[in-house]
Length: 60
Image (tube, rainbow, N blue to C red; front, side):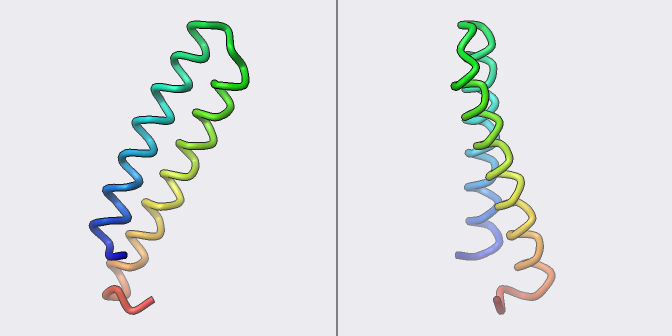
């Protein structure tokens, strides 16, 4: 996958994760909150991966 695809997936995971976190908080569901936090962290990792690919010219 290229830089753009990684960053697009990262944005999706961050948005979905935030929604899960907020819904989990509103419904007093700590498991869903934790799942949302983890998904946001995954998105952050994908964002970093995309940035590294961009810096290296997609050679990794």
